[in-house]
Length: 374
Ligand code: BMA
Image 1 (cartoon, rainbow, N blue to C red):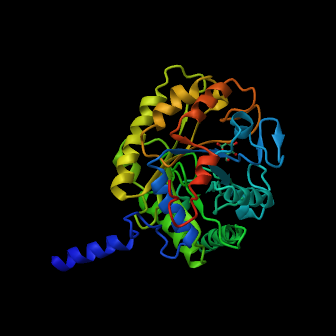
Image 2: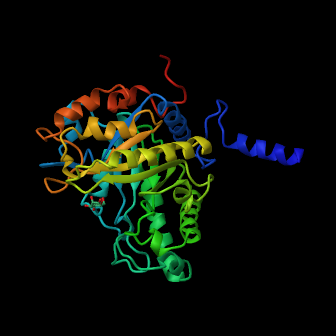
Image 3: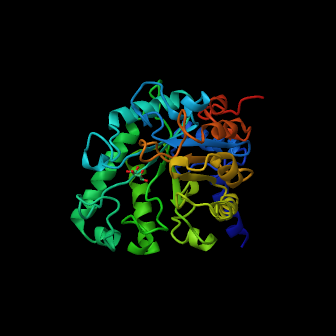
């Protein structure tokens, strides 16, 4: 018994830094990646970082204008977190599923890192059983069939190799690998993707996740923090049903959108806050970082959405970040832009000391070993 307790103690020590923070699941994580993870834990006690998908690539009415960002156009500052997607990298396509060329995406992620921000990648990958089918293919048992089909598994593994090459190609000014948050197989408590709840068993989902992480580590990719991110969930048990294990996850999160677009009940607030509270208790217990990995109200159709709806959901919750989805154009946007109806309210949201944008985040030097002295 004493011996057992000692082993458990040692096991716990292995995942903790000398200051008692949790270390990344990858024991070989680069120094910058470890620093980022430890600093995310520290920063989440100070405020929640604001993030935006494809922020530096395009916005409403513009594309690839160096230095531009819809967020910066509104508040004079960049977001702290930058979301990107790898979908179609697996097909050797020059651009991702949202038409962002991978070479531009890489350069913009390098820019985000250089200015002290954080990059996070999702992956809307096609179906490895049939590469002409997208993420939204709802074929049942894709994962089980893939693991039973040598050719399909080989195909998936070759896709992972491309991810490894891309991740390793993210280099900072001194040749160091840029740490990023990798968030594969997201929204799996829903069933719109082939890895969703109704298309695989919990064991199959976990197998896929672990295979992915193990392979990337084997390929010597050591600049990733892994984010497990569900969609809507009803309880702690529901959230953890497909959880791949504490040794396979660095960040716990979930995606939730304020729907339907014209909603006036604002049920989103209490429902999402409930999920945030559950997430917080899971994060605290597991000593992981927690985040709202995607959210938004389409076309930000409520002018005071930021202070009236989002703020009560995210405040005092220990969240590391909240990320809103992309500003594709007039047809689809989740962040304000100059002249958009919620722009003034967004300025008020920005002024809240508990929300962190680019400047305050950069001052925290997230990739450096020591917390800056105050
Ligand atoms: C969805 C929409 C799509 C996009 C996909 C992947 O939510 O924004 O237009 O292709 O995400 O980014």
